[in-house]
Image (cartoon, rainbow, N blue to C red; front, side, top):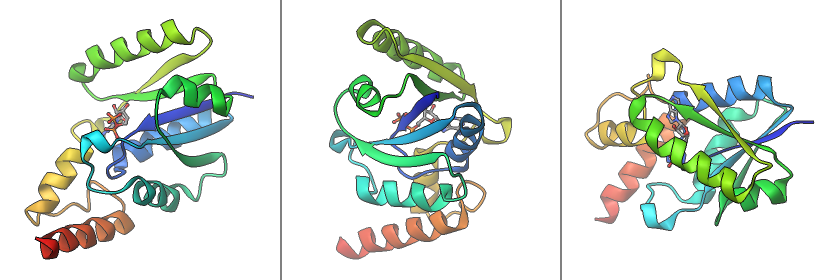
Length: 164
Ligand code: ADP
């Protein structure tokens, strides 16, 4: 059985992430979406919120599970018994960083391989940061994220605004 981990910040999940999750879940037997508990990145959503949102939008995929993790990705992969890391590539700008990360991971964990999915061209421009930027200025984000995530983003931004 091939078990894979698709790690990321997912702050918040976008149609670009969802496309990779759907495609990867057809290629591997079991996919764990790993949500990085990265306090240093100052995320908009807490790790628990990011996990819950991913669970909402992947509930139709029976072989997909969502978990949070901290520390080294390869340690999380080993603990989960996963032998594959899934990452998405949007543009050449992603490539250099992704190549370095995958080579480092392979050096520290030779039994774990990274597999890249190229972006669906429809979503090549899409990132969580762009979604947050547009949403902050009240722009339309329904082409970027599923409807339930639009509501969560709106709520969060309202909440942040009223806390100021
Ligand atoms: P990270 O902080 O690890 O980059 P992200 O949530 O930004 O986390 O991205 C997780 C993974 O999803 C990365 O491999 C990234 O390249 C990929 N990804 C993000 N957006 C898209 C998209 N629109 N199309 C394809 N892959 C994407």
